[in-house]
Length: 471
Image (cartoon, rainbow, N blue to C red; front, side):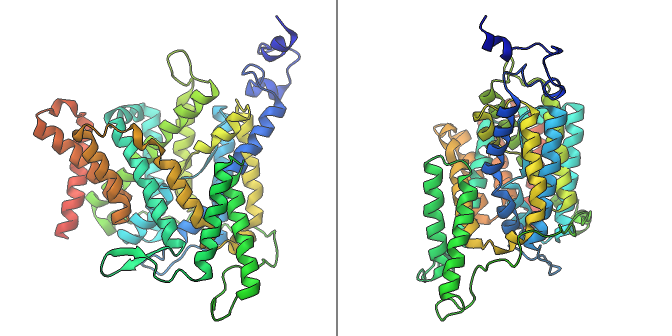
């Protein structure tokens, strides 16, 4: 056997191995400390855009109590939870998976819980804390896998696609491209000749080019470059007749003490506000989204890294799922929205990351970002909006995997996808799809093909919709 092969396959306990190597099983998995560090930086660069996108989404809606979440505060808790939980993933689960506030899940909190259902921000975060706690219990009892098996794969795909379309339309609205219309509900902005739209268009073109060229950290670079462009425009045209309000300003400082004012601002009054059935439907909707997004992401990443066993299973997956579930609850506790495992972890895996040391590096970088909150106040909505559109593209890629030729599957999938952007509610999309699937199967006489648990889920959503009509 060649020397290089011997070095790569050092047995656990070999005296040549460092304590770090033994703990993370670095050599055993065919990696090295240097490779793991590089992989950690690659993953962080690819997903650090969430530090700016999450505050942009959560800060876009004012709750019924008149509270708007401050951009710097949201950045602080976003970095805090991502850092701590990614460290936990690396140290406890020992896999190169990174965690941060979930796109789609934060949209659910903002536009479904707060904007549509009328919860305050503390109540909405209480919902996230509850669902995270429930999922944690389901992991510990082994029930999570049973729920996963109850939902047809095509509906799982449709949920992700619908959320992608939802994020894309939010990006177009924030970029000034799509506006309200009395005649057609939504329409193209009749006034595209302004510098807000120009900033968005330039940002979209630049970010799309970076993504097309597979530039590492392309989304983050796109946000920062678009912000610089906006600052330059602001210096030349700010507070003029064409741009009376300005858009972006150079910060007075780069580093500041973190503001943890949002941490612990949760309230469990959701049941008092919405009633038992509607509150349960809301919790169930976000829980299902969290469920399937994580399971698909983890299995896909593990397969890419070559970490699955001969049966196609990930050894110790319950540890991964437990950290991910606790991260959801931690996101609610900190008011950063539900946190989940990121598909962008593939960036580090592609660089050779195979162990939890990769995640430790990512977590450390997120914790350092806590001190750079002044930068967050500079990022305009027009700079983050292009990223939402492009993330929508990423989430649309599985649309061809749905069995569209089977109307019993295609119709529920279609309803799931279109109801989310057209009603500005992820809950409505999930509910409509599940109800349609169960109803069609019953009318076909194929009721045995429906998992019993899905009947329970459909019943909850039926009450959710009827209760809304009768309220």
